[in-house]
Structure formats: C-alpha cells, structure tokens
Length: 172
Picture (tube, rainbow, N blue to C red):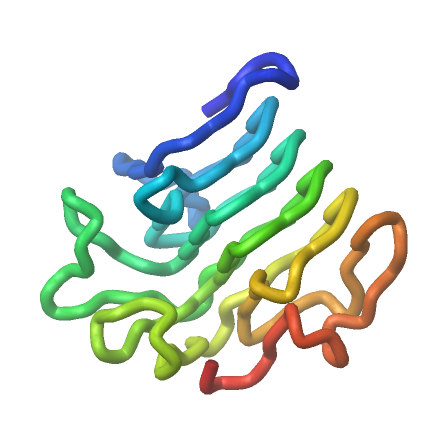
C-alpha cells in the first residue's frame, strides 16, 4: 500500500489477506499523509502476523494497530478468539503527533473485547524501533512484550521502561 503526497489522509479500516512472504504478512507501509479515525470511532488495522516498516508522514489520531489479532470479514473477533504470539513490527515511524491511539504487537483481548482493561500481551510480541516526530499524548499506548529500550519522541530519546505510554506489563 502506498499513498502519494503529504496532503493525502488515510481514514478507513485496513484488512489484508493473501499469501505470506516468509514470516512477514504485511511488508512496508508508507502513508503519505495523516491517519485518523472517523466521527463514529477509531480506524482499526488488524494484521494477523508480522509487519515490516510502517512510515506515516503526518499525524495519527484514533488508530488501533493490532498486530497479531485475527479479525473476521466485518472486523469482528473470530470465534474461537485468535491472537498470535511472537508477532513483530520491524519499525514504526510517524512524522507528526500521535493522539488517542493503541499501537500493539501481540495483544490478546482475552474475553473478545479489545481495550477493556483485561487484555494481555502475548509472549514474543515486539517493536524493533519507534520514532515519533512530535508529541504522543497520554491517551496513547504503544504495547508489546518486548519494546526497544528507547524511543524517539520529538527528537528526544525517551526510555520506554519508565514511560507510561509504553507498556511491558502482561495485564493492561
């Protein structure tokens, strides 16, 4: 997927299917503008496996990135529930700010409802590197069982272990 130009915004759900290439389900993603949820809710990207490099050249608002979640054709959780351990996101680069978003690798909804307080991180979920050009608000969570020791936010190195926007705990 590729969008051209900095003025192009991406505001929709993303569903991908097809043959895998090695262990990567989704290669690189380059969005030329911003990504934002709509008036009725968050944008939701669910990829049931590994993701390569994600580059978003604008701001991100109300995005649920669920690497390792398997959703049905209408965005519903599958029955039985399916979430995969050991999924990785090679890199996440956002040029602008991030607000009210959940960016995750290996998040298990446990009871079938994401982000209701009892979700758990599955073993092996990881982010390779994280770079955000501007601010990340306190409503945003970037979660995986393994995170880089630092992330770049607004050109500053931030230790992920001591920052509440990043979570290494098994119970969210």
